Length: 328
Image (tube, rainbow, N blue to C red; front, side, top):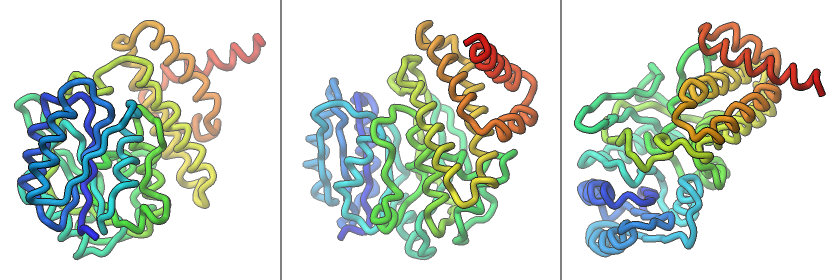
């Protein structure tokens, strides 16, 4: 069994893949397994990965898997999870990179803490600018119950820091069925995943390691593309609400889930001019339907707590649903 499996999905990232692969080499160890998953790229990414898999096999265990059709990031990560054999697992996106020696530090933290998973800070890279982004949890290098890090509802918490690559995860989470992503989600795939992780894992810790460099503003990233795939955030948050409503602590946790969902809807409505017109109309329609599905008491509380601009946008959608229902 390898000590660590690193799952790296790639899709049309020929410009960035060489940096990612060089960073894997700078972290290589015979006890590490690199799983390179090409999600049916249409550029030169597959050729780059084939060469890299051969070269990296001199310094680490390597598996290269190519999808016959594009399935999205969640599906590609699941492919990697199904193939992974490591005691610990982590993720890296195909356009990001790692600092030299970071993976060894991550493994050491997992060994020392003995918990189900650890979360790490990261560095955001936007062109030449660099900024540090920290896990919104004050307790460091100490294992505790991940449920304790979901609340309070009115503040950014660990479930809002939904980056799968910012941490490492014990194999027992795979065995329990906790670590897989919702297959087919094209965006916001980390959201149901991070909530499930915090509800169902037994222990976690936050460690002050800075080794992941997240490349922000990549033109091919779905966060930069205003097409219909962006609307998968609604399916993702519907799942968060449904699963949280079935949780033993639903009364405590639902207000946080609803408030976050509302904030994400308001964010997309504020930026709807970047969507294609037909998709913008679909965004408004689907958001209105999502508001109708939410627990209405929790929704009312969330709207009262939001600033005027965002709450006004959501109240207009809510009135639209009420008016449409009354007319019908």
